[in-house]
Image (tube, rainbow, N blue to C red; front, side, top):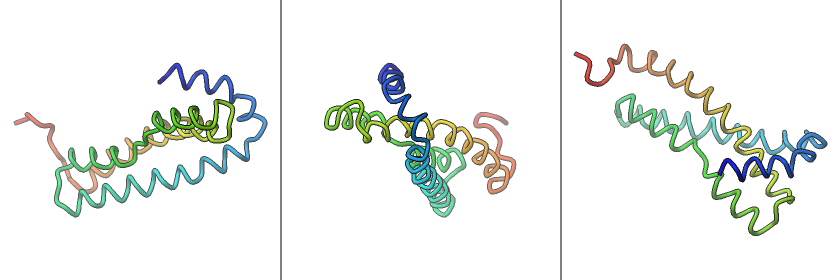
Length: 123
C-alpha cells in the first residue's frame, strides 16, 4: 500500500501543486465525512452505554476509510493519472492528520464523559 501511495504521489504531484483548488474541493467533503462519522459514532457508543475503549474503537473504525480499496479501483478502472486517482491520493493525505487530531479529541472526550477511567488491569 505504501509503495502504491508513493507512486501515486509521484505521478500526481504536479497536479496536486498545479491545482490546489481541486485538492481543496476533494479535501473539504472528506473532512466533513471524518467529523460526521467520528462524532456520530462516538455519540452512538456513548448513548448505548459502551465503555470508553469500545466507544473509541467504534468511532475510529467508522471514521477510517477504505482508501486502499478505493485507490485500487480507481487505478484499475480510470488509470493512474485520472482525476479519480487524484482523489485517492488526497484521501490518505487528509485522513492521517485528521485521525491523529481525533486521537486528541478522543482523549479529551475520555476525561469529559468517562471521568477518570483507569487502565484495564489496574487495581
